[in-house]
Image (cartoon, rainbow, N blue to C red; front, side, top):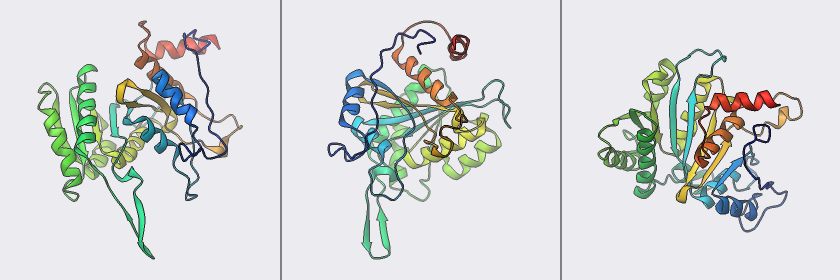
Length: 284
């Protein structure tokens, strides 16, 4: 940003080495307050130890900041050869409930239960965001991804909300696609899709699948949208401690996520993402 002379003043916050009782995670309360105060943030990769009883850092961020929509553009990059050269789609993932509500418990020894939460409020909210995004970005189609043929109550409610919102946008084509069929269609012909909206778990899986179509997680940006216009941009790949200090990490995803943050801030100017990236490279 300094090389490109972007007028941004940073507040830097680091993940702590002790659990903050106010967040019940290694994420500090001050970092959350910073995002609330500024309305925007850029997050680096963070890892939560698996099976250690710690609250997920990413889940904490989404819950505390009410980041209800995860938006991940997925498009072919010039000069990066993959199986496809015409990928240009957006995945929009409901970010606060579903199987990631964190409601798990042991019923009896050897039997555990996980609750999937789908609400009308959250489903309408993310559907409205998806259709509004499509309209304001010149997109023509919204696909609701589901498994309502099996989970008739939960995914059925999600689809009902999507249909309700779709009626307000007659200029946008609306379709419903079962998630397993969606995966097959994506790897056969990703050009069939434009904007995809889906519950939490499906979005986690499908967005990574889409990243694989264009070269991997090191190339795909992401931005979490919350109530009141809060936006938290992030690179969605992991912290990759196995390659730390080896000069192997791909910075593209974080750079493009930073660009998405600037788009959200709307600082003005007419440069494209490519122009902005080239300007940084030219000044380094």
